[in-house]
Length: 137
Image 1 (tube, one colour):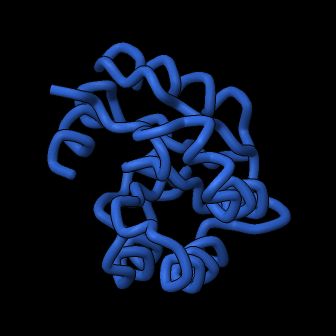
Image 2 (image 1 turned 180 degrees about the vertical axis):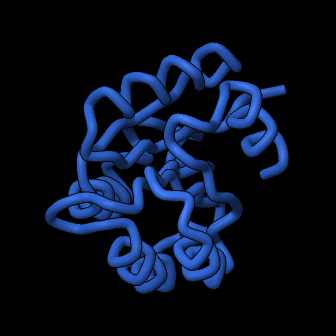
């Protein structure tokens, strides 16, 4: 089975590295990393250019999105992504929220968006958890 392409949006270089390593262990080879919501939206907005560069791997099937980031955090990204999704063909994109907090209200707030399909806790989510979440999408 072809593994989906993944866009990681997280301000922590360590978290991006760890997620990339976990994703590679489960067979994901097409991984793009961005360090905040603004650069993630810019990447998705460059639709034609990225389709030429990444082919069938763009847009990414999965976006792993950190909740708390400077410049543009996860919830602001969700709002802007919702607007962008109405303009571009981003229906394939499913979002997994990735948070350092286990605040249940964060999860409830995130899951109100129909394209948010899961919520992972940093430091508690294993490679197997990631595999399960991605396998379900």
